[in-house]
View 1: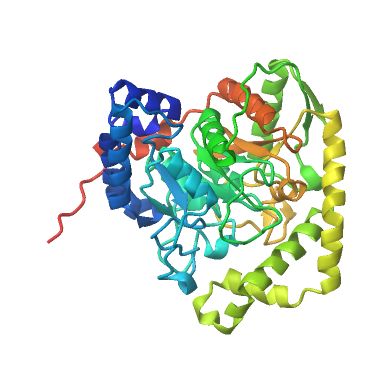
View 2 (view 1 turned 60 degrees about the vertical axis):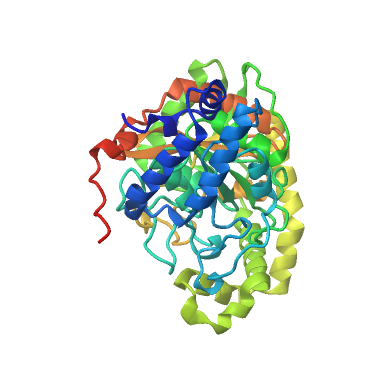
Length: 460
């Protein structure tokens, strides 16, 4: 397969750079060529940055010649357009933000830059990251690399598509209610939401402030680990995973799940059992999460963007609806949600005293439009398709999705959750499970092999 360099694990790529077997300059040129030919089909990037990428790649090559090493030195990393990158437009997926140039990097981008990342562009998001899809008024919707007629999910949908289509080695995303894990599940990737507060984004965009965190979308758990270590300025110990007690909840909160997803999740539970873990089917005490999440998210949105209600013609229907709903919030509901938040977090923490991890579906349906029904049961339009990620944003716990199989040729994700601060243990468990699941990425990689794609039309 052509372009295999872009699918190398991060450690293998940086080792090849250090040995001189590969050059960051050459790999960056491969990325830029792929963006030119593939991005018009998947619309992962809203802004391409070839000049910046080439400067960063040349700097990385020089640093390798001097014997320098850094965790992501020369590695192509796409940046979600919810993060500020110095001297670059931050659209936040909104017409209202066009032309706004960031004066400086936000915190996580600054750490990626210091770690030597090459940044070929900024990836598409729904308006102000307020949807689990990746559509906005700026341009075409982002397509799923497995089938461009399907959604990649959101709000880090452009980030997921950039990795899935081979337009970056790894992607920076953010997760306020599932915005890393949902698109990772839809695109057959690893998506990791760290413990809330672990990866601070100083000077960053504000939305879902109580719940959001930066994190990676990647091909492997180890790639995700490397990025989070950079973002959190820490090191996670890698140790062999001993027998663990895992709470298996196939239908959290009693919500319906597509049968294909239920079957794959049962297979994942069986795999964990085969690995020697004690897998206990049980309920999880997540009731009441939306009575906390909904009011606090809307209150945040009204405070930050309420002034845009005077410009409805510039807003997507979902952002306008969110702002209008926020104006109807009662202060008592916001106060009650604020009071209930630490209570909910203690409840989940107490539950996890009895378990090392939780296994749930990542999303409730495979792909397509938001469903009105799942497995014959009516579901609400807003969260009915995505009810299994947000509770753990409310809980503040680390959570990760792994590709667990296919349904009609499209990926299915399985979610693992651990207690707050147990990020390293969760990554170690996920990595051991990943090896046993052995997900086959070849269909999507073959789809975007440049050797089989038509040459772009020459510019007249």
